[in-house]
Length: 334
Image (cartoon, rainbow, N blue to C red):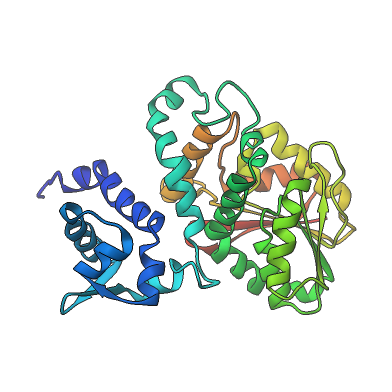
């Protein structure tokens, strides 16, 4: 058997690929090319690129599969046209914007995080990991857009696959911009939805819901799931929420969900659920390392872990269902 160092080198230098894409998103290259494809000279002027780096940068995006170049004219691929053009509702670049501004530099502290168990971002020293984000309106909007971008595929899968015909209402706990409850309401016209998050999120949520034509069926409730009871609804959803917190908080949130649900109601938890053998879902394991960097106590978990916590809380008929990519949902019935 031939043994090659290729995979080691490709992984060890993968930050080259990542930063090239993140810088292209930051420079809004895909949004500009969606308006007008262009040749090298044209794009240098439109995008403010220095002649020394412009050609290599654009051609690297071609080689990585993010741009096309035909007869010297650069344009988006179908993939980048759909998902990285800011003018389209399918834009998922928010998470990449946040990765570029926040996560990329913070991941430089991974070695320290693994050795000390301490977060490496604004929460360093045990501070509230979200306080700095929520205190800055511009940073908050970027964060909320990022949550929509990283969650969109799973949100749409939940909207289609969960048996919504059996229920009349749902509440999204830690709703952020509100994409989960928005996708559910768009796909299920009989449902009424609620987004629950800190009051600062309200204006961003309401703008997003109104832009999707759902203001008559989807509303916002401000509060903290640490100090307030959860809103009552037939289904309570935690999308990319449980992994932010330590085990005691995870269990506390599930207990609050059980108390707020009616008999027969359902809780839906989704994250990048790690496979039970902890050997296949690399994204889920890396996300757990991201929680190490980003939070004082958060971590990702297996489906068996979550089912066990739900059963301890009193939920029945618990099951794990794959959604899309690395994301799966865990469902429990009261």
